[in-house]
Length: 319
Image 1 (cartoon, one colour):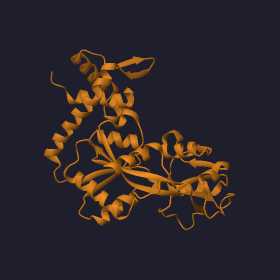
Image 2 (cartoon, helix red, strand yellow):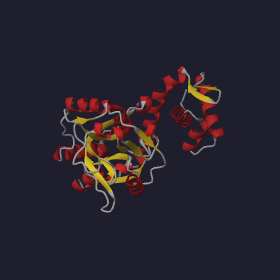
Image 3 (cartoon, helix red, strand yellow):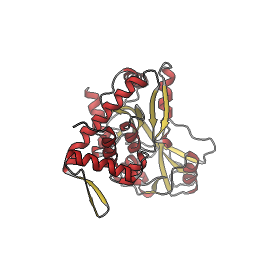
Image 4 (cartoon, helix red, strand yellow):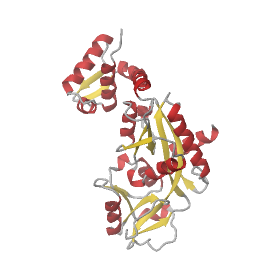
């Protein structure tokens, strides 16, 4: 049989969202049109790909077997179109982790390699970046990459920067006068961040590892509201890159964290098999800037990384 790429795309979107409404919205289809495409694919394959029970959508065993080959087939189709249409366009890169200012790192690479043609966009978070990559909307992503089960299938990533984090506190916080602090010193405070903590892999792991109470509420509205919350609540604190600037009138204290220093891991992410042409140049340029500025240097005895980041760093050091 000849596979219909539109039907495969409908299947993959639904398999990743496990929700027909969200999958239809993602593909700019009506839910009825999406369901018809999946039904035709199931009929042609002679199997059910989804089980639909009690309003829950799950992949069947056949659906699980199809998912990764379907992703590879769609990628091959997207690459075929790109080979004809997009020879001279700039690389499309999405960024996430906005509050920690990922643009600082990308901008430095672009300054040192001005011939690198890049078009920047923004994803809400890692899953949104993966979805954009899988659909061929972007060529690469830059942000923190963390374990997401099979969502990372078909996606390659490389650690490019380890960034030390400070703690930011209200000027009225009991620890505001310290010259340096250990993570364990924060156990009488509340680690706060403006998003659902379940989506904040790094902060959640940091809080769990050092037994620091953590809370989150509201939306991420940017740096000024973030600092305003810290400034006005003398019981909470948060983490912020040591090298990132803060407004002069922020009204908060930033204190280095030591013994150990938490390191925020930034990575590049791309589709497996795309490592050629402009993307190869991007990877090479990032590696060169990282080596020049020692972005991956660290003392394992004095630094803290989540287990997944530490394993990725070991893998990188061995290659």
